[in-house]
Image (tube, helix red, strand yellow):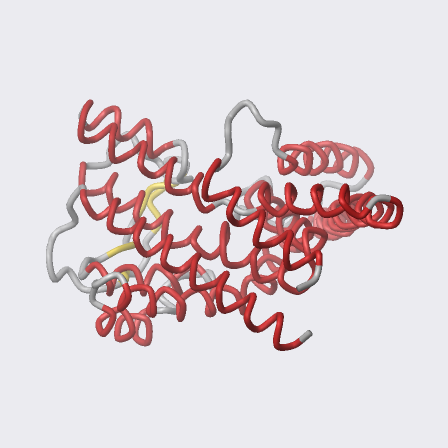
Length: 319
């Protein structure tokens, strides 16, 4: 077993135990500062027209990916060369920070606790911290659905996708993925400000998530069977509804989640004061209920564990 494999397993276990403590500075924040700072410089240098913004967005992607990949690559290379124990410890710590299994569970569970103990307004406030849609008019079912959808989508974006890239290239490639994913979350909007500037980041995010999203969906179907949920319906809804989204990737795991829980997800939603018409995913076999948030956690953890186990087995066989 290589140092990289050991680091991935150690990072995965650390993430399950500690999650993302708020007092611990996260490297993704540094990536966020890099994105914001680079964007300001680019916008001051290029014309504010379609062509200029497309070029600027491409430059942003090039700079952020290069720095986010190059810096940890150099640091790890030096650490492993002169003191392998330090290299292993650092890569393990970075793998831990790149993964988000427990933090996804904790943040979505805050919505469950807020709704259960404090009521609808508290639930709306809690879910607003983890979704991009307008939440001020959501019903209890709407708040619950938003939380479940977040768990479904981020099981891929926050767990399986970074794990996929770390299994290929360790923490360095994990940071490459996180940089692309963070850029998409910051500039990949189709509004007036980012319609053209964010095109490169959004397209690249679609590309790097294409395989992981589908791997995540298959793993989640297996997890549905293993956790006693409706695995057969999960597979059925996945085949039928996995493209019911403008993004080629977002509906992959949402479709599985909807089928496994026997509920309907997605549909119309408000963003920045505007109603966005979106197709539904799944069938309303039953109404959403608060416990569906906790049920989604079973699929999150089941998918994550399967991803690690099968990924490590494949890595050992290939190497």
